Image (cartoon, rainbow, N blue to C red; front, side, top):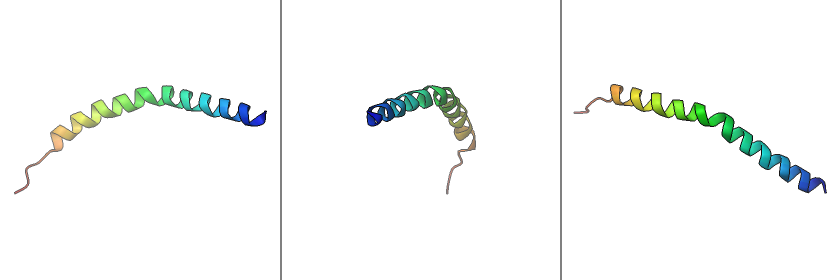
Length: 44
């Protein structure tokens, strides 16, 4: 019984974590990509 409750809470926590972190990962990808293009240098 407790294992079922623990699994449900673990699944719910994973979903909540994914939803909460998604906008931050999206912003990091956008700004990281823009910064990466500006810092790219040519190696001799």
